[in-house]
Image 1 (cartoon, one colour):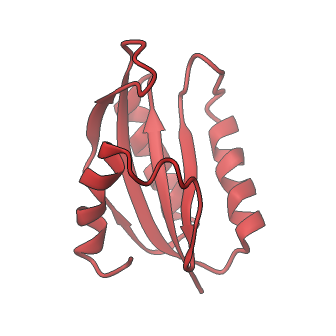
Image 2 (cartoon, rainbow, N blue to C red; image 1 turned 90 degrees about the horizontal axis):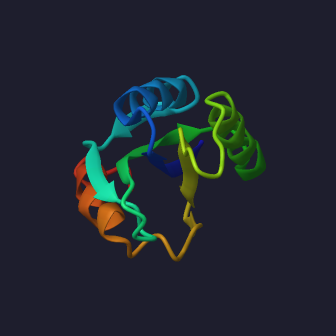
Length: 121
């Protein structure tokens, strides 16, 4: 089993999409732990509001398989460039970090303690 951390974000029907993604991820991850939800403004300063959450758990999928699964889940919500119904980013796979520029972002740093409290990462 491989340990994973996934960042979840949405700027359209935020609560519904975050909840739906959380449920979908629970079907792919063992011992899933979800952070609280956090509202943030778009990092590009365009005034849009995002809801964010982290999910951690374990998977037997390879890094390529879990990445493809995340893209498939995003596609199911008809995401477009401007309407980010769902953004799922693989942040950690076993001990390998991904999306390195996102790790220092305030919303990631604010949500990480929710996950760390469970000893999953």
